[in-house]
Structures are given as C-alpha cells and as structure tokens.
Amino acid sequence: MRVMLVHPSALMYSEIFLRLEPLGLERVAAAARDAGHEVRVVDLQVLSRDLLDRELESFAPEALGISLNYLANIPEAIEIAHHAKAASPGCFVFLGGHSISFIAEHVLEQAEGAVDAIVRGEGEPAVEPLLAAARDGGLKDVPGVVCAEGRGPAPKLLDSLDSPRPARDLMRKRNRYFIGELDPCASIEFTRGCPWDCSFCSAWTFYGRSYRKASPEAAAEEMASIREPNVFIVDDVAFIRPEHGHGIAAELERRRIRKQYYLETRSDVLLRNEEVFARWTRLGLRYMFLGMEALDAEGLDLYRKRVSPDDNFKALETARRLGIMVAINLIVDPAWDAERFRLVREFALSVPEIVHLTVMTPYPGTEIWHTESRQLTTRDYRLFDIQHAVVPTTLPLEEFYRELVRTQAVLNRKHLGLRNAIGAMSVLGRNLARGQTNFARMLWKFGSVYNVRRQMADHRQPVRYELPLPRHSATPPGRQDLFIHTRAASHTRPQPDPEPDGV
Image 1 (cartoon, rainbow, N blue to C red):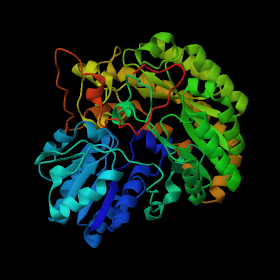
Image 2 (image 1 turned 180 degrees about the vertical axis):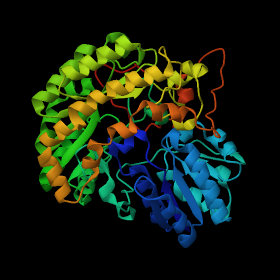
Image 3 (image 1 turned 60 degrees about the vertical axis):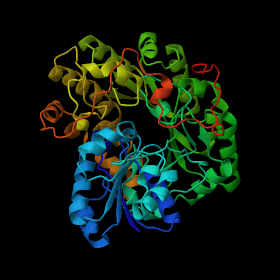
Image 4 (image 1 turned 135 degrees about the vertical axis):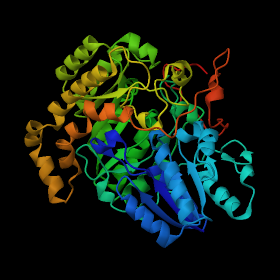
C-alpha cells in the first residue's frame, strides 16, 4: 500500500524554544516500510499545508495516518482527515498517538466518518496488522484499534526498543529541527516509560508503569547513524538506571562518537547517579531539562513529585558543578495571585538557570483530569497546550495572562534577548555559518508569540471540536483503570531508592 504519515503543525511554544523531529512517527514509518509498504512522511512542523495538499493528489495514498501526541492538534487532524477523504475517497484514514489514546471513541465520533480507525497505545506493533486489516478486513480484531465496529483487544507493547530504527531518511528539511542553541538537533530514545506517578503527567498511565531500555549496542549504533552534531535524548527521565547510562556511554566511547546532548531528568536521579552524568558531560552533555515543577514542599506534594525542595536545589548545584546548563520547569497554578508571580520572578532572576513556565492543565490520562475537569472553563482542544488557562484563575483571566507573560519575559531578558545574543555571538556565528537560522530567529520572536492580546484572542475563537468530560462516579478510578497498556511480565520497572509508590 501507499502509506502517508502526517505530523500536525507546531504548537505555541514550538515557535520559539524547540522543534523536535517526530521520532515516534519515524519509527512507525519504519515498521510500515519493513512490512513492505511504500511510505511517505509529511511533517507540518517544517513543511507547508500546500505541500500536503499537493502530495495527497500526486502520491494518492491508500492509507493516511496522523500522529496525535498533543490534544491541541486534534481539530487540525480531523480537518486533514476530511480533506484526505475528499481528495481520495477510498483512502483509509487512521489516527494514533499519546493523547488521543485516552479519548479515542470520542474523537472517532467527532470525525463523523472521516476517520476509519484510531490506534490506542504504541504504534510500532500496531501498524502492520492495522494496514493488513485495512486491506483484508478484521479491523476490530487488531490490538489497540478503535473503529466503528468497536474496540479491539488491548494494545501491545513493543517487544524491544532496539527496532525498528527511526526512518530518518524519509524526513525533509531536517535542518529545521532544533532545541535552544542546539541547531540543528536530532532526537534519540534510550528508554520508554516512567516509574513515578506525578499527578499532572500521563506518561506513567500510558505505559502502564512499564519501563524498557534499548540495548547499549543498539543505542550506540543508532547514534553513529545520526548526522546532526546535536542530539536530544527524549527519555521521560534519563539515566534512571546507572548501569544503563554507563553501558551506552562505554559504547559511544568505544566508537569515538562525540556530539552535544540535551536531556530531561529528575533531581533525585541526578543526585543519586551523579557519576553517570559526569561521564556524559565528557561525551558532550551540555543541557538538561529539570522538572522542578514547584519551589515549595506544598506544591511538590500537590503534584506528587516525591522530592523535596532541598533535593531540587542540591541538583541545581550539582549541575552547575558539572558544567551542565539547566532549564527549570515550574508549573503555574491558575490559583496564583500577583504576589506569587512576583516571587517566581524574583527566583528566576536570582538563579543562573533558564526558568520555563507551563500552565497547570488537566489532561485525559492524568489523575488531575479526574479531580479538576469539573472546573473546566473551556473544552476547546486548541487551548490544551500548557500555555493557556483552562480552569478558573484567581486573577481575572486577562490579568493572569499579563502576569504570566511578564514572568515569562524574565526568560527572554536573561537568555533570549539582544544583550544575551551579543554575548552568544560565537554560537550564532557557528550556526549561521552552517546555514542554521532557527536559534537566531527565536532570539527576537518572543514578543510576537507570547503576548496577552494573542492569548485572549485564542479564547474567543469559534469552537467546533471539544474535549469530552470524564465519566464521574462515586469513587475515583483506580490507577490501573487509567492505564493504556497493561504491564507484561517481561517489561520491568526499575526500583529507584526510595520506591516511588510501593506498587
């Protein structure tokens, strides 16, 4: 079959801070190609909608799949599905991805016949039987599939992260992928899953608390195939298991692979496994995203981070000592008043790290979805991008956004403004000499993306597609009721010290 896979357009924060290659879609593309299909990928983060329209006509796909890791892209995906059906009436259209896995039946109904199937769970093990069923029949028997005939068996977990290797050769304009000054930047995956259970996160509910690791040999072999000088390690929490981090490092050292790396981890993991991170700094680890989420113990308890403020600040000191630049994430509670915003600004100005803000957002698949969704002030998918408030704010909404933008501007002044750009001229010069303009463009784009008028206008958009509300019952759902995947015996979970929840 001729199969076209589509990644939707970039979201608000992707216009400035990062634009990552769609690694999951590349792996699904590889699995489809390995099954004998002719595959084409269109990433609307870097390619135009006009190009998609032209390729729908010229390539005439027999099957079209759209990746939906983010709720905010669902209206666009439904629109593309309708367009694909109009352009090729016989085209089999399917959706898949992290966020849509939790609300598959609802989106299928909203698509009004434009979508033939939705894949819940991981796409790599599902795409071959899905495409076979699209051709020969039996959709409702494919694990993880939701279609008009009903829901199929439970989705399967990929047996091994070692394969399929992402089909990076199918991507166009790879030079448009970046994160911060790492421009261009590829992505790679060493592990999948998370053993913690933060209340705002759906990573652990999606994977059913499973945790899998690529073999050090396969990870290093894939790294050797990456042409970009910079790599973002996309693991939910990097180097939970120190022996795994050391194993990959040893393979990279043996192959004499040197790149610049960016990763995400937790404070307690950094403190416990400092030797691993120190070794990786010698391999080129330069940047780290640290989800502190809150500055005080009360906030950390609310989000069930299972770390203390002392751990967070010790982790910052450790990263500084290792020479790693840290981007801190803090969750903005819509209940914040002007004084709380002021205190956060003071903190952001007092530390050398980048401070990034995301707005607390109840997502399907998270525990707070079941505790906070009754309060939703909007169900417009497009506003569920962690940059808009979707529950009541203590401050009037416009004033809330004014404080939010004012606080976010601290990051702009410290790290993205003209003064800093002059100081980072060597970085700019190197990037521009290679024809890379992503970092340069983001330095001056902040004000056009983050402004109160734009965010208020987003709330006034006509709404056609809305998020469903969860079914409320007398008792909250059990944790396993939230899982997309059920952990098989072969899929192990690491045992951090202390154990995250004792289950």
